Amino acid sequence: MNDEEIQKALRPLRNAPRIPTDRREAAFERIRTEWKAGLAEQQPATTRTPARRWMFATAASVLLVLFSGVLFWVSRNAEAPRMQIATISGVHGDESFHNDEPIYNEQTINTGAATLSMRLASGLVVRAAPDSELIFSDESHLRLNKGRIFVDSNPSTHNNTLLVKTALGDIQHLGTQYLVDYDQERLHVSVREGVIALQKPEERRSLATAAAGEQLSVTVANPQAIERTSVSATDERWSWIETVPSPIDIDGVSLGTFLAWYERETGHRVTLQNADPDIRLNGSVTGLTPDDALAAIAVAVELDVSRRDGEVLISKP
Image 1 (spheres, helix red, strand yellow):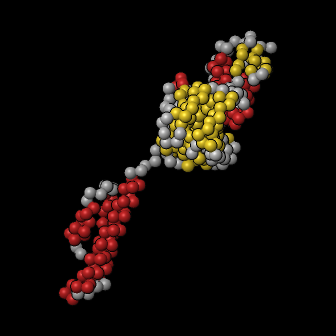
Image 2 (cartoon, one colour):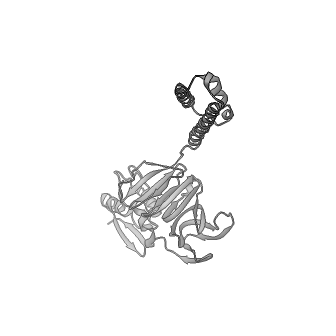
Image 3 (cartoon, rainbow, N blue to C red):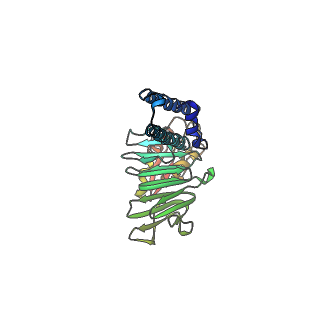
């Protein structure tokens, strides 16, 4: 079989997806080399029988099928590149993950013992508790297979919406903070800020909405029944997210700016009694929880911190 015959055998693949020239030529050369090696083991062409010609035709068909498989495999992988969806911005409790590590589409994230904070390019932040499993299909769709996530979409940043999908319902938000807790048997959606809509899976029709201070619950035993209860912004169920707070650079910022960050991270309302909100801060609170950061700043600028019924009181001594 000469080069022209090989090209003719491969002609049906001319409309197949293109692959890099070097890979295509390498595959062609391998077919030609193996074919010639086979010819060397056969009798001269003048003594070949029809049966032997049939054998060569069959071998050519096999090579064609194999080469088609190479083309399909290469083109399939070339057409499905990974797309970075988010970046890990905080890790607590496990060294398997690292800050600045990329998260890609269709990547299964099993948190194990870790608590993660992931920031999307839009600015939206998703935090995942230990023993959670989730997958981003793209920047606007997240599948929660089990566990807990906290979605923080600050309305001031005008970032993209995110549809969180579970087997018991899909959650859509509009500028909010909310917690999704799902374990295959039941789904809880707790809202700390803003509004969410709970939808039937794969449908746009909203089943129910919830605002700040409300929780919606659905069970697998009765997925059409939605229970509505109250939830405090300082409830214990929110505490795990404080181990991976959104970063803040306090160097040169005002006390008031820091306390606004603290309120958003903890859900605690802060009251300044006789302290100046324009006091400028310096240093760093990187790696500290919001409460530890507040304690460190209080010492640095000589403030008293007290608590009353979930409220944080800040004053000068």
